Length: 266
Image 1 (tube, rainbow, N blue to C red):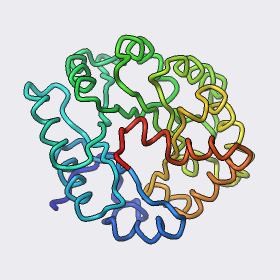
Image 2 (image 1 turned 180 degrees about the horizontal axis):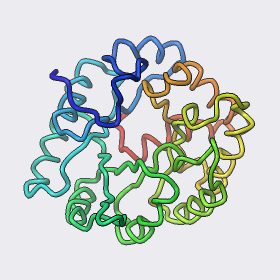
Image 3 (image 1 turned 90 degrees about the vertical axis):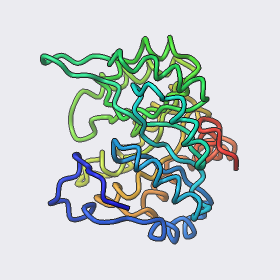
Image 4 (image 1 turned 60 degrees about the horizontal axis):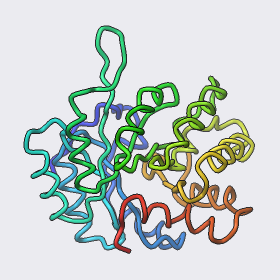
């Protein structure tokens, strides 16, 4: 496949500025006893979505694809139908905020597209920080048919910042039953010189309190996690966090919630 532009990835990033293929992930999944995974877009390009769906046909452990699609496209419904026909297309992740004249707000142009997303029974992942969640509060209420997935725990500022603001924002959005939280990105969010468990345990306990295990799902964030830890280390740190929970609660976070929110046929 022709390389797609990734504006967020800097050429000097020696860890990530190279090709990653399913064959590199498969041994880690086997070692950790993970039978399936959902892959998530990295490029704002529908060609990548098609490519990820193509990869799923040759790699049975890819159970779902969260891709990118232009929510303002006049033929959006047809595009969603085409992706669903290509493979386990289960949702999208797209930027929904607009910055103009120094102000940030919700991009109103995507609202009809979100309605179409709901009609196709697809989830919507959100890569946002706590300060940005305020722009979505009303949307979560007015679009109750969409299953919203907040990525990377809402990016708590573990390296210094307004943790109280993060808690308030996450507590507020967790009141909506159609909002879920992905426990991912922890190793890159954490301040590496400090103890991981000491930093992340309080954050995990807060989202567990706010969302409950039935609305939490684990994400490895591979290969981005490689900037701080390999797949096995990410998996084992998550295992340590959920160890005090019941077996039923652990199953929900490891797999059950993902099956539910992405409607996975596994």
